[in-house]
Image (cartoon, rainbow, N blue to C red; front, side, top):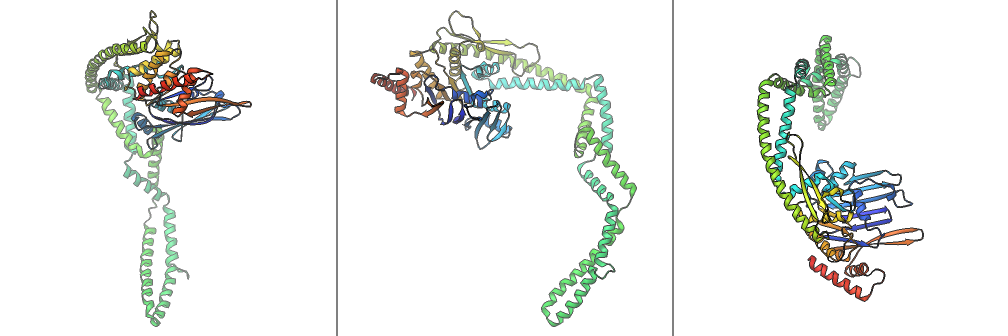
Length: 559
């Protein structure tokens, strides 16, 4: 659910921050006041192409931000987790448009690209109205709506699963039965396996090899250094540590005869002398035992060099070469036994094809039944919405080819006729924006509860209608609002009266500048706004009374 929308220096809006609640929120205002700017802002946050003309004149950038509550949107939460953009169950979309034409976007404070912005927006908000970019114009979305209306999720999942498995087995068959390519691959694998078997090492052996290489490479330095330390500790020089310690023991022994409290300290020096002697002995043995074998070093160095060559060849870290060996051995075994493997794979593919065909035919029957029911239901709603005799026909077109398709054996196209006597045409080709918006509303009402998107936005769905039909439109929007959050831009009081909340957009001029103001109306404000929508310039007592009555009736129906 959309909880807030913030716009700054956007078109004629200097700054606005709007809070939204559940149910139906209506937006009204005089013509040209900027009612549709809220819709435009949401479309830009959904990834629509930005236009530098949307930045308020005299400013270098416009800023848009929307926050959504994801508590009832598990798909959106899962998407954010996959993209590592999740943030405590909430989602903030932010976009900055610059006057020179560039733009940047963020999701939960992290930079996002156009793909990410569009994908998350599809899970959060649907925008219907007189715009070319609408979810219902997408044939994929039309199919998803039909499948959701039919309620055959398990059947669809079975079809998708069988088709996916069939394709995966096909890839294995092509790899195993590659003819000359297969023979070449076997020869290459044998050669590369031979190299890896000779040089690649498991983790523990590789660590030992690297340790030996380091020690052998520095053997001379190690022996010389150990001997030097022995000279410092127990050499012939006057300042050798062992000599100095001996003198300290003698002096402290004399003092201990005068004060027995020094005896424990003398014992510490005695212990130090013992440990120092052990260190000197150990270092002496180490210096004599250091391996100065140049042949062994050359052998180890060659092994390390070959490992790095193989690392570059296979584009893998040295530590992963041994695992690569196991993978290549498994592939070689599979290719060399391709005859039996191909027979088994062929049998599995035939079985999957049979299972797919059976499930896909059931899916086709379910879709055909659902298409008839949904078409009839939407046709009835179209009549209620002022398109008497309107028809929606859902045409199922067979998919070319015989290979299993994850989406089934057909695709769907919504065909619409808004007026009697006119042949149905694809929904995406319906010319009238107002009719298209009302058709979208009828489809959304008919498929109510089958759409996972939490917020629906309708822009001027009441264009070209009035009277009783307008009141029906308001009732249908309210019905949607019982299940989803709905935002509707309207110019009809019959629609506005049935909203849970009401936003008024007004415009004022100060000198050479024009400003748009957006406010949330209380009960008195709503009555006055309905009166304006009813009466125009001159608002009489009768107009206000009519507005009050309309508001009371609309709210009573909405409860």
